[in-house]
Image (cartoon, rainbow, N blue to C red; front, side, top):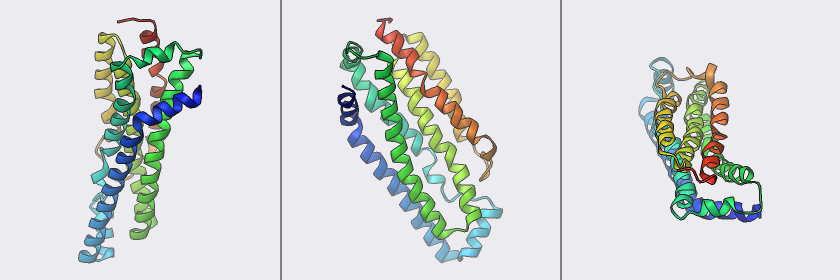
Length: 222
């Protein structure tokens, strides 16, 4: 039964997930083509000085892509369930309803983590090729909230899509609009290091909020 649920989720998101991973990988590759061009034009030491002292962020092109991918996965995963009313059938299976929702949510999060991990490793590898450790470390600390924000965005959009009561749906939209920008605040490289762990914990707490909407949905509240 659980394998069937996981396979169903995979069928819904597989092409979007593959396309999103390729798109993010293409953006990262393009970003480092620009880095290579700039180094050839300015010389490596001069470019490093610009990054260190002028706080230029060579990785800014990917800032909002993890969020867009997270939102897209949530839409691909849950909108068909609502439109085709398949989620109601899932709640009538001889399995614990909360476990079904947690399985669906876990699959979505793991799919995003797989996508983000592949691109993150490519980013770190190419960064280490072009830049010294200090610059790479600051870059990692800076982009980490962007990827965590993608996971939080996935959870919040899933919550909004699955919520059957409009007053709650509107409330969640406001919460998402106020909360998600925290992960994308502008700042110098490395500025988010003191709160990255807290942002991760908050994203994990948000991920289980889907159970509230699922509860009202399966009880038939409208």
